[in-house]
Length: 451
Ligand code: TYD
Ligand code: MG
Image 1: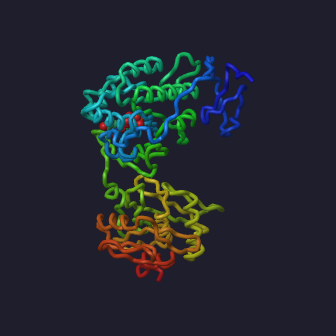
Image 2: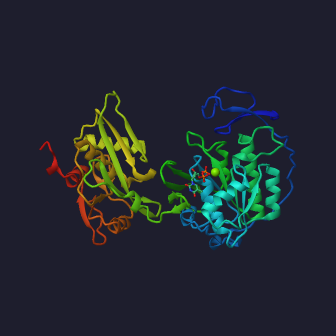
Image 3: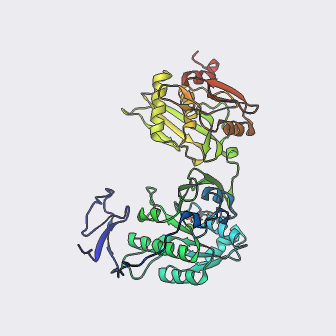
C-alpha cells in the first residue's frame, strides 16, 4: 500500500497513521496526533551495488581518541571524554543549565580545537552575555540559525571538531510542512545531523527539551538515533544538579556527575559526599547511607517522615527512591520488625535530588523509616549500607571496601553492615544478621520517652 502524503503522527511516541485519531493507539496519550506532510521520497534502488566487508581485526578503533571536554564531571558521565563523530543528546527541564554546561565545555575545548555553537534559542549577543559569566569563550564560533539546510551546509564547510545544537527542537526543514519541534521535523533534523557527524567527523551535542511528564519532547525515535542520552536533573530552585547517562554506546550508564550552579556557571563537585552526606545529628528520621553511583561511592542522607494517615490506602511517597523498593521495605518492616505502618503515611527523601537505584541503600531507607516512626534518632556518627531480603535478613553488597573508605574519609565513626561484610581500614563495624538486629543496634532505645 502506498503511504498517504499527509500522515498523522503522535508527538509523544512517533506512531504514524493515515487518519486522525483522538487517542494514540500506541502510547495511549490523548490529543497528541498531529497532521504532518511527509516529503515525497525519491528512492533510488541500491540493488546490485556491493560494498567490501571488513573483518573486525582490520577495523581501526582507538580509545585514546576520546576528547576530554575539560569539564571533568561531564567527561566522567560520557565515559572518559567525548568520542569523535558521536551524537550526544542532552535533555532536561528548561532552566536547569543545559546551555550553560555545553557552553562551558565548548569554552574549554576551544582552547585546542575548532568548536561551533548553533543557537536557535538565543541570539549571538545573548550567548555572549552568558559567555561573560562562564569565561574563556572568545574562540567559540557562534551561528544563530534555525534553518536546517543552512546549518547542515555550514557544518559541512566549517567542519568543527565539536558542535553544539541548542536546541534540536528549534531547527526546521522548510520542505517539511509541519512546525519546528514536531515529530517529523525533529526526526529529520536528527537524522541529517547524524549523517553529517559521521561523514565530516564532527562530535555533536544536541540539546533536547523534556515535556512536563519528563519524556523527551518529540519522538522517542531520537533516543535510538543518537549514541548517548544524558539527562540533566535536579531542582532548578536549588543549586545542585545531577547529570546522568540514560544511554551510552561507549561507556557505563551508572556514572553521575554532580554540579553546583553558581553566578559564574556550573562548578563540578568532585566530592558530592561532603554536600549530600551531612545529616543533622539527633534528628529522628535522618540516616546516612553509602550508595554506589557507577564506580563512585557517595554518602547520602536519607530522610523519612511517618505520619498518621486518614486515608484507607496510606501514602508511600519516595523522592529519589524506587516506589516498588519502598513498598517492599515497608512490608519487611511490618512483617519482620513488628513495625505497624498500616495506618501511617510514609515519605522518604534522598538528599540533593539524587536517585538511588541500588540495593545497598535498603538498610538506610529502612532505618530512616523506623527512626521516624519511633521518634528516635539513630546513633551519632553512624552510617549504614546493606541489602534487605524479603525474609528480613541483611545481605552484603558489592564494593563494600570502597564504601567503607568513603565513610571513614568523611569522618563517620562506625558503619552498620551485614554480618558477612569484610572489614576494611580502621573504621569500626557494627554487624547485624537481620533487619531487627540492625534496628536494635542503630536506634538508641534508652532515649525512648515511652520506655
Ligand atoms: P541555562 O543554561 O540557560 O538552562 P537551559 O539551557 O537548560 O534552559 O541556565 C539557566 C539558569 O542558570 C538561569 O536561571 C540562570 C542560571 N545561571 C546561573 O545561575 N549562573 C550562570 O553563570 C549562568 C550562565 C546561568
Ligand atoms: Mg538553553
